[in-house]
Length: 478
Ligand code: FAD
Ligand code: AMP
Image 1 (cartoon, helix red, strand yellow):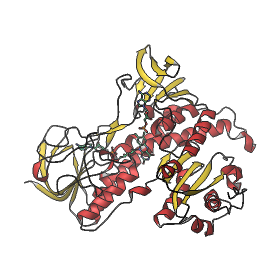
Image 2: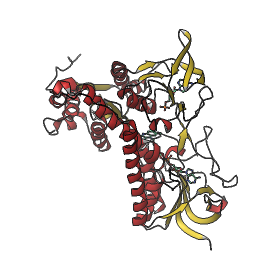
Image 3: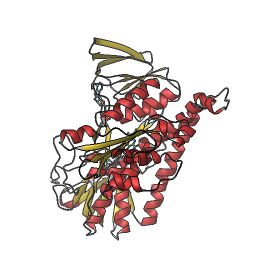
Image 4: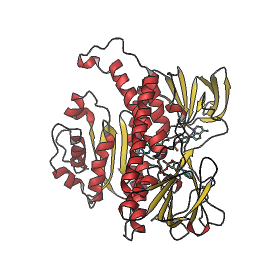
């Protein structure tokens, strides 16, 4: 007999699994379809983020940072650490364990909340029927009142550098190296390229990042991006801007990359090459031709602000739809859609999705950049505070970077918080909370911040917006 559900979710990444759990919590009979298999051939939940994205990359970033600190950050504290070495397979195994724990945790949550897991490939048919094809080829059809498409994204490939997952790898392959490459090339200076480049640079690889654009981190505030380029370059990353890869050749376990920049044709040889030129939506065999769901010109599933597709009762969330390809954006869309299906009037605030790059120092922001606001003709006041003046940052010997708060010049409402520095992601979240409640810079300035904390840098930057900082000289009023 055909199984019927109130909600069927296709994909169990941070968009899909969160949507499924939320829907079940709201009393809806919910199923979630997932096909991703781990190395043991078992279905693993959690999508890109848990299996080959956010979590494993942060595990390696944390391991490699500890190694880097032991190598060169301890001496200043008077700690002698001789003979420090790195066991790469052990580091990779630790990462795999974390992934296993977390993906297993999602299965437990499904059971605890009564979400039915359907293993296999999901395809939306006409009339909100969904076909599930198991690994052995058998199919079943389930019926749904509502369907949530959450099929995610995968790495973009470029013809000049075809991925073989041996010498030329994508982000997934770059999480699996069993030794430190001597020379590592990275195509693309986006979030993923910089994070993975940092991991291997900290472990001793000589890293060159080849980026087609002239401008570094164009989405970030220009002042922060400039500081980031300076800092990462000082750390040893060779960042070649305005350099477009045109070809590559793999020979004897090495790859020669051809690219063009302002000086003409260039060539570099690496032991490994990571292709990190962006991600694209996954819609392969997801939609039957008569299911009625439209796509946009870039291959994303077309949705409105509430994630409704062109078919009533069919929604799409996460990386497969417009907007930032971020796990927290996917999850919040999942919650919004589940609540709307349950009859609530949930909305999501797309203006306050924080962005983070987990380099060291971290780079994070929420709201608008100074250049965006200028282009929109909004008059602003800006306050900055350098970590070099923070007692807590000095204690930790981590004084690079700054906090920048941008507020509307007439209302004082905070419109952007931008941080490069220690724990930037956590600091920016404080800005995001304030901004969600419409905080002014003065409000933030009037709050009591614990001393000594890194958060005090946010306090001081907010005070600096109106020339009231205590621990740095304020800019003279013009
Ligand atoms: P996905 O996580 O891609 O999940 C989609 C799931 O659907 C997959 O499990 C897939 O197998 C399944 N699926 C697809 N089609 C079907 C089908 N037809 N039938 C059944 N199942 C199907 N984001 C952050 O916010 N913070 C970070 O620090 C961060 N770091 C990242 C690091 C790396 C290296 C990468 C690659 C990404 C990172 N991201 C990060 C991005 C983040 O992983 C994605 O934004 C997020 O996973 C998107 O969630 P999703 O649920 O939309 O899709
Ligand atoms: P993101 O989209 O943030 O993951 O970043 C991917 C980066 O890769 C972008 O900044 C692109 O400009 C860059 N990129 C794309 N194609 C090429 C190429 N052929 N050579 C060098 N950089 C590229």
